[in-house]
Length: 529
Ligand code: FAD
Image 1 (cartoon, protein in one colour):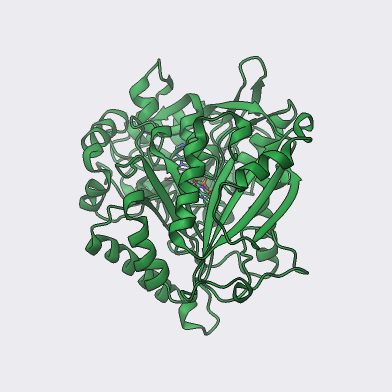
Image 2 (image 1 turned 45 degrees about the vertical axis):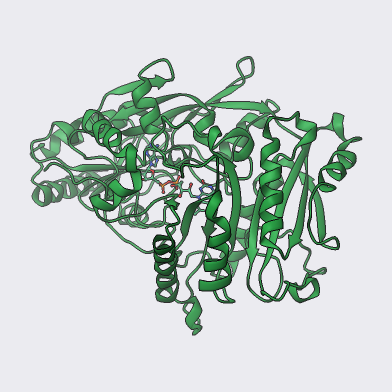
């Protein structure tokens, strides 16, 4: 322990020299956190990377908090110090462009993990586990909780959150700082529309509870707020009875207009009774010649591969796959076939292209993790991911199809391309997130992996270049897209991104994080030291 303390003192001295922090090292040690303050190179290395593998920034130290109080102690020390230092919450490090990194401060590892070597505090001190209220149909969770663990704990009570992301190994605080979307968003809104209350540690180190009724400005600012106004330490998430099973269906289109017409029809049913709509509506674009499987799910059996050429892509080389699900309970097992059939009857897909599978609800929600394990086994998970996520207004989606899917992409995609529409009125415009100004907009997600395998079209440079081309095309064509999980490097670009919301965003920053010490990896504001 003596060596550990020595190492930590050394790192804190380095912090002082580097950023002019005037806190006495012993004082930082005496902050008295119940969690762990670590300078273990392996902890620092993990905190300096993310899923994108495009940026690296080494923090001076890593805090594993035991509670919101630990976080408040650290943020207060940063806020009150004369020199100042930055503090970045890291959920599960699944950002693409270093959004949870900082090079001149402390990273707070929000997710639960067992400890490294050079640390102080008790290794067993973890934040409170999820707490379910069956009566009020909500769950209170730690901000660093992974959604998979939220699901596991609510299922013990036969309940589950309503709105999801496709992948569950993401933290609650991380997705709520963006929006949190998947095929349920047309119906329930994004995850940020399904939160009742938050506890937040602001950039001044205060712990505030906020909701629609209490500290409502902070509540709306933090949701979709890219970590700029505070660190979410608790979220109260709305629940519903958990379905038992899922009927999962994919159908193909060669006509983009039929595909989007059907998607838009399906999301227009959101106000109907549960029996008259699907529970999940997504879709993806297939431009690669070959199988219509992709890494995000092993939907099609390897013994039953489906060749694009066997379906026919109408001469354009592009197919569109609508992906829909219907949840059901033991009590509705007798009517599920009929409900699905009557919904499918209204759609205009290629008749021979209906692929159906049926699985437990948890297996459906956790589908991308299975694909992750397969990719990891092949060494294809920890590779650079130059992902690009765009919200495209419905009125211009056909132009986007022509210019991008049938134009810029060519016939190699290097990863899945998702496309699905959402209803804008399910998004609370008081939140910080920005969406196109139309009743319906599409998510188009280019989820590509860069490989060093000698194929030019798979290199990082090629994919980055193509991303730039896509953005330029939208600009030139006047397609007013908004980036989801946005990444910009200048304040001018951020002002443009936020548009009318910028002045409120800026005002909130000055109020809740006036020294601009939080989440500097987003590169929106520069710290005031
Ligand atoms: P991090 O990357 O650790 O952090 C993201 C940002 O939030 C940082 O700025 C960080 O400082 C801040 N932050 C983290 N925790 C907190 C907190 N407690 N309080 C305040 N700020 C905080 N997104 C979707 O919406 N839908 C999807 O289907 C989806 N699928 C994905 C699949 C994969 C394989 C991957 C890698 C990402 C996916 N994402 C999806 C994107 C994901 O939502 C974002 O990466 C998000 O940032 C969550 O990741 P994280 O918890 O690791 O957060």
